[in-house]
Image 1: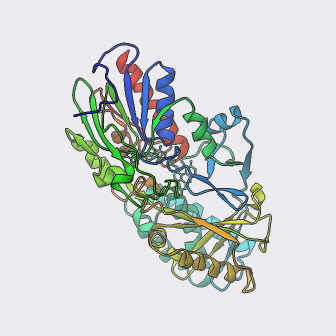
Image 2: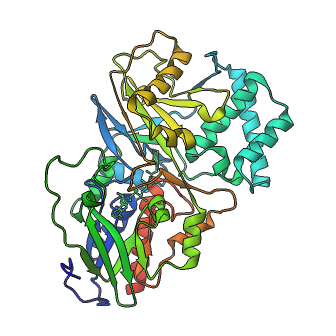
Length: 459
Ligand SMILES: Cc1cc2nc3c(=O)[nH]c(=O)nc-3n(C[C@H](O)[C@H](O)[C@H](O)COP(=O)(O)OP(=O)(O)OC[C@H]3O[C@@H](n4cnc5c(N)ncnc54)[C@H](O)[C@@H]3O)c2cc1C
């Protein structure tokens, strides 16, 4: 093995160790900054050419929009909110209670219909707590049958399940356990966006850290003395990277040292990547961990973000939702105008709809959303001036959007995934936090937790 990045001894056991962190998303950045603060020599290995992972702020016209995470979910006690405050970043609360819902023919549901459907959802959540096993779909169908629903109110009930459960979980109802129907991964308080982009938090955390970009880790060897990682230039493995066109054209890929030795490693690979086995562990991970990786699910949410020359929808309403005969085709859009981002709508697709959209061309994806907007706001609405969309399902460094608990699994799988292997291989990432699974704050806290585990081992 040639070209070792670190020349130091394994297992020095002193205060300062050489520690590699795989992945520069919020988990990796949380771990690396904590470990650096403890005096360790830390290197992050990142397959993309940017930090943030599934936090990905980008420009659309003169708007700053989010292809990945948008909100700091709950500001009270949330470390990401505290970080934004420290950095003096402006944050804006989204009014989650401000939503208009429309039936298939574009007729808006009334306040009285909202009240009825919300009452049913409350009862459904109670029921789901009593019958947590089996899929959400099965329980929704049972409940629908018991209520004897039909026509517009039946469509509204299924639309409510879409917007309150399926979209937040990034799944179709058959993919997720019924017991997760009312599960909460947020801190208390408002849901806020960061003006100028959530990516600023990742960039700030990365300051002063040693990061090797475009470096795809393919093997992690470990024993009682240390770790050896094999990595390659990401471009040599995947010529058509879904990293936002961030790679220069025509440039030769940089030459990397491909063997990295360290005392310990923190692995923050997304669950979608762990599931493929693309990254080989030697010896292989314990059986319990492999089972947890298999049992947990990864949902897909994709966004189509449209920027218009003019606003043709009610400016003050935060969300618009459209019912469909087939509820998995229902649409929800976020109006960013009340949050200070002008003339911009974000369409959320989840589950099969999102996975299918991943392979559609741009025109088809935009036309789907435009068709739904025409149903809600009339045939005369203008075409978008610009758009951007995500493709998390086929993004090789994510392979999905965020984890969920399928029927037959439980949140305890996250705790198993979080457990270190020996005292050399540590795990963080949004699938390793059973309290805040699938969130940016959960990912960050998991990184801090992994750093703390290393501190405890070294003493
Ligand atoms: C569409 C969408 C909307 C979301 N909305 C919200 C929201 O509003 N609020 C919220 O809190 N959360 C939200 N989330 C979830 C949140 O973005 C994630 O939970 C969180 O960012 C995950 O952080 P992480 O560090 O665990 O993983 P990641 O951010 O995925 O970081 C892992 C890193 O590892 C890198 N990597 C992968 N494979 C390799 C390899 N072999 N070698 C080296 N590097 C590798 C990746 O490139 C990546 O940078 C959303 C996610 C998506 C996709």
